[in-house]
Image (cartoon, rainbow, N blue to C red):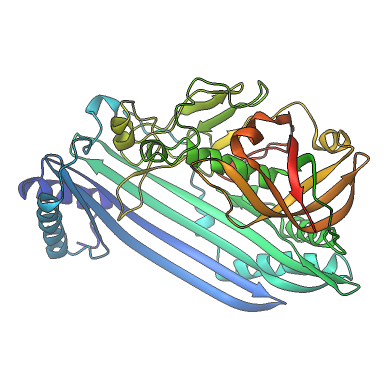
Length: 450
């Protein structure tokens, strides 16, 4: 059975679930290969290769459902899994919103989104070690003040996913990912600071070079040396793209159908209302070619799509899977994410804030006195109220220029106010994550120092 095509295994499970009494079922079968390397000060600290194959079955008996998973692909194990899943579903409490999507909603084509690079699967451990070593070497060579390193890491993975459901959907796709990062440590006058840089792509030839990653990480660590404290004040706050992306993750959590029906979102009843200025547009798009969050269909077989979440400042759409949409009388937006052994949940695909018209240099130059945030610490966000308070590290802005590093400060506000007060959006959008943003400036926030 282990040599059977994954699609045949999916067919067997669906048929066996039906034979055991399921009124509907869906199955995910996935196989993956991965390579991870860790290097520190030129020595290999981690070298791991893995190959995994596992599957998950969700069975419905009317309004009752259960999810199980297994890594045992033997025929006997699969037959037992199907029978056990249906038996488990029979004793679960009924939920009138449970069920698979309507057949008319399912994807009818599987587009090629450039998610798979066969070169990733051919990368050897030696190549991974060489790239991590070179990234760390470039960081250490950048400046005499880079005296230590927390290490460099390289990762590569390929996977194949097969999904099938009893309404008749059958789909599969392959994807790949490769990443490289380094964390140098800079020291001067008794001050010691660390920072990082990284690159993550679907294709090897799109990865930033080890030299560039190393030098960038070194520059980021060096600029944090001799950090000062600042007095508590209210000033404009500029979020660099990495930190601005963090704000979008808070938005993604707040527009999730699950947060809405559970009453844990500060955006409940805000649909159709203005939550940001007109120059703020946020899009979720699972069809971006080569995107780190792209996939040809979602975790329930619906086509991924482009959804405008915030349209020129107006909250235009929430994000749903089938279950959360039914709970709220809406329709799925194709945002069901599904790990093998879990029921679907809502997740963004490629969520990004559309680039604005201001260069990042112009945004900094526009601030007479304020904070440029490069790192946020802690989890001080209340998803119900939007209250926001997090430790921050960054650079102080004086006279429109980055003046000196600052630390041991906290920035505080409310996410509704913060989105409403985004008064500049940068031109520097890069899709470095599945959730990405350009530089943004918030007109005023409380910066608590000491």
